Length: 232
Image 1 (spheres, rainbow, N blue to C red):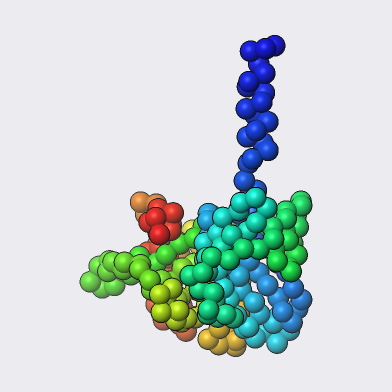
Image 2: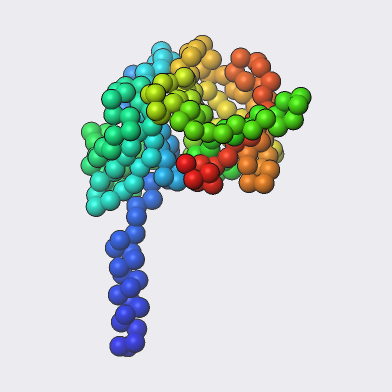
């Protein structure tokens, strides 16, 4: 029995100090001020929009960690408050079942990172053209797509200049090699809200190849890489 005590104490310490897992999609607010947060790896993004009139309000997100009951974040983009980009912020954090409290918002869980095959935070790293694959190297200027198991959001921004170029999001499915988006928010044109876009998708050496037609009808053939893999 004495020999087992150290193992039991070790197991208890692991349980006590295990980091809360908030991977997935969360929703807070009202119909007029709807907030959808997607969390993948150490990254997060929040889209704020009006469900009634289909209007975009704003978006923010970046990297985060959870320590001692606090949600500690550094935003890479924030259209609601540019001054906090690159500055470490802290929020109250409380997770109880399917409810997550951050700052003044109580989020309800939408999914836990399943069932979609593309959950994660991705950066565009290449485009395929008639001249072959044209590599793109993400730096301060990024186009990120972050997905849970059922939700997606893409964001184009520059974390150094604090420029914002656009965002869109909604729900998605991955079935039989087809990635299908249903747009719920689009900063550039709210007339696109409700549209469904279908793309071919596959994995090539761990990267996501994404091809079809954009929301404007233009052909696209893109390569996306997990941010964790890139280390940025």
